Image (cartoon, rainbow, N blue to C red; front, side, top):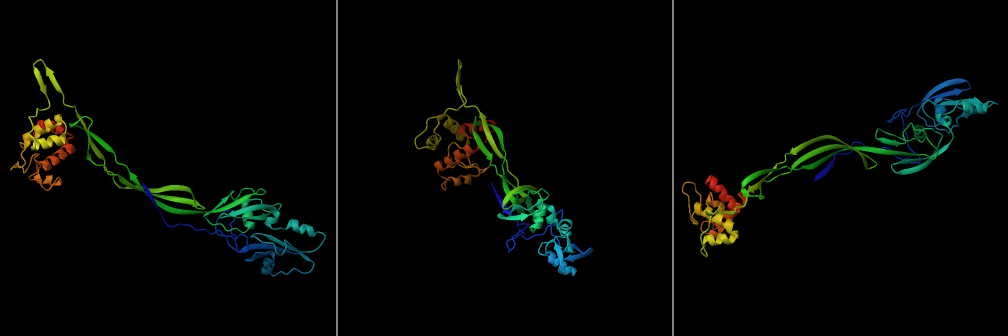
Length: 368
């Protein structure tokens, strides 16, 4: 039996689709984390390099930051609307027979990567087909402007090569602390008891289950558990062993020899109807067991309902000590033979199993 409680989540989803239908992005080179929006761009303007830092997103933004306005007859590579990345190079040159060289010598990273290919990007279960010239998963996510944080899980890996018709999945991992409570089973100890009939079992001490509390760190990806690590465990309640007494006393038998016969079970005298002995015999139901009970209580009280031991305080037919214990069997315990016998048989059953078990114990201890 166990229950489970989750502590508040330690991380949250931060990957979302952009409002324009594209993917919002930020990816640090070689790591997953927060990236700066600043980009360092080199602009070659008719043979002169100008290094500019810009927050802009396009070639036009970078040229504006550099204070360069292309003149008539100048060509810009890549185009003014192309997206830029940190470290890109932009060329602004006059049109000539060498114009095509501009597009091959000076280009953005995405243009250098390879042919245009279509890939499917899935984020939080939502998918979109996009085109990219990247050759790796990392490059594709950079080109597509995907924001990743420390909890992002990307498949395939960021440095895996990008194949045609590939599917890139970006999921979010969340970590929570979960505490469970489990039952600790109790052990069972058996003790042999010669005062109980063989095979008879009596529970002396009832077992009580213990309790163990265990704390786990659980990681989920898109709501599905992917790992569970135990971080603490301890028993908060010790189990109590159950103690069972198992009888070993052989059933009494009558033996005979040429010299006569004898029995380990005492002989019982005739029972008068309506007497306390008659009530007890009806309750016991077995002649042999009644004979043992008859001998036991004859020795204890002579079957007298009001028998009282002034030195010990024992009272009644079974000599309950104190006599008030018999109130559990009836409020008339002081005067009712039936109530006293009912209590006495219950006591014998719980402690010795049978009247003969009690009689056997009495013979060796002179009390029961």
